[in-house]
Length: 420
Image (cartoon, rainbow, N blue to C red):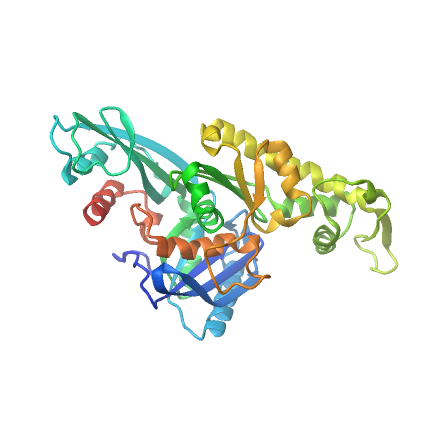
């Protein structure tokens, strides 16, 4: 199966089945859902598998990744008693671009063709041949320098401006993902940037409208998304996550990685407490029999390894937000989600370093997830489904289109014809 056809993303309809595939560094998750009244989404099938062949959200072993994806999809299909063909897939490593364009309208009423001219005038945008288009989101319009206009049609002015937020991802990584999904006999219906999906799943309407950031801490990456006036305005990705914490524990305590992960989950904390000196934990040593070769160490040893890495991640987040220019838009509100965000003390540490109000977020706009599956680690997968039914005002990008950086403005024209 190839990606050269003219397939266009379908709108999710009531009673229809939609499927999301979250390919992460730690796990691969497939959600199958049914669209109900008023665009509500109810999960009918769930499948998850330990991720193999994936590092920092990018595929490094095609066969191993194909096996993980296939197993997750099969489990979800069996639970839902449905066979799926199309999936919405997440894309890691997003890169945000902003562009502005302005055209004269000579005091006349703004028409659809004027809006089309404004976007066509933005040909100076250079995404680059090594970048694949994932999203093209109109952020706002301006008339005679007056910004913040959401729909300029029918208004009067001399000059019409448009601001757009474009998200790209490395073309090679996107192509590898497309090929791997195709080898599982699936079509990619749409690609969604991971931070975009996480924000859609975890932020409430007021947070999206007033301005806030969503930080998704995964296994191999930590992603950031900033929303304002109901729209995604910026996103970024840091190549650090929960796996790096686990590896630090394994090296620092000379214990196997599997035991390091177990200790992190059972005994780990983001912030030290006085009780940590008194609580003792068994630390199996590399290469020794588990019962004979275990060290007995205070929990404080473990926390002193975990905390510096988490501090480093939040320092990176703070720095990226400050350099993006959107730190003021975020205000004081940050939502923390993702599998790696669940350690005790994580919210307090994030508040301390980011100097913002932080809450732990989980998917709230979706039904059918139980307590175990409705946690922060399923935020991206849930957000993929929500993107399909939310129909955000953006240029639709089908799975096959994202692999090529050409024809961008032709698709902008298509979006304008269909949506304005």
